[in-house]
Image 1 (spheres, rainbow, N blue to C red):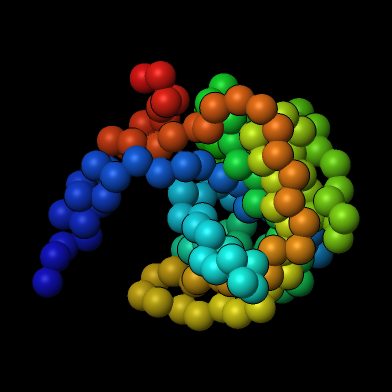
Image 2: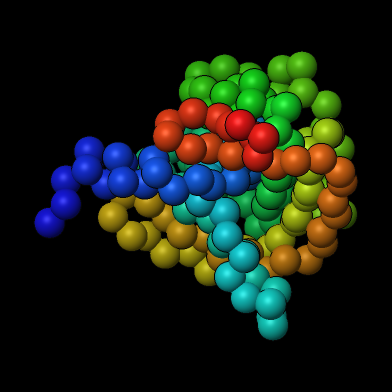
Length: 156
């Protein structure tokens, strides 16, 4: 069986997009950075993301019904780092607006999706959450990419 370090090294060679998953928790808006967002089905429209089961941010929002998916632009690496950092006010200095069902949509993102949780399962140390995509919006620009343990753009 592969070791965790080997799996991390292999996965670092696979470029992924970067999103911030958002929701309202009991004390206000919450969120975390993820690279595990994927379109799962077109009919019905389903998407999924994975999150560390014991993550502090996930603990504050795991009971939410609706979640926002904010696809970050190439110039939003600092925002990705902010939402990946534990123990801080992740929304400090961040402009956002509520999606149709209230999930925080981060201003300036490349695209936004809001969905309702329809399933959740635990696999190893992560929870996989499936959302029914209820609302989508998109803007202009290039996506933020994570590759070889660093942020990149399509140009780099």
